[in-house]
Amino acid sequence: MAGILLALGIGFRFFNQGAPESPAQPIHFNHKVHADEATCNFCHEYAENYPQAGLPTNAACANCHAMDVFNSVEAQKVTRYIENNEEIPWVRLFVLPDYVYFSHKRHARAQIACEACHEGVGQSVRPVPGIKSHGMDLMNRCLDCHQQKQARRDCFTCHR
Image (cartoon, helix red, strand yellow):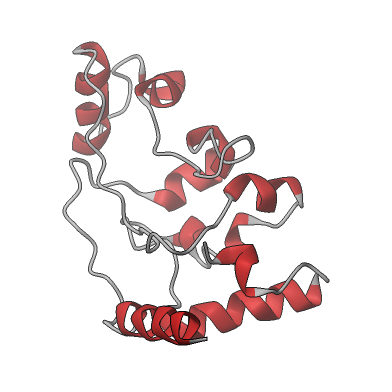
């Protein structure tokens, strides 16, 4: 029992540090422009088959950016990374604590829309942390969704 209370206390302290600031990215990425043209899984290609969705790879970007046909400075940066065969050094925006387990694959296969957790990301014009809720608010959102979907809600489903 003491271990569970300690874990909850650590989790509560971690999550209540406030919303994470967006770190500087190598490219000013506009989700809205991309969401209008592609699905989330087009760029985050691991979401349906792995626990993590993954960051966009040059191969994914090259589908549209292989030729220098886009006029924006940011699109030209993408093209240069592709031409130099250098992966774009994206900075992850949200990292769960080690004791929290979340599988994008399980949620994607259950046909949970990305926007259920990443609310409004398809309308964002700059990279923002992937989940707006934090701490106990995030945990309560997850538990509410699990209850609605009649999914498991025991502690060890998400906490390892």
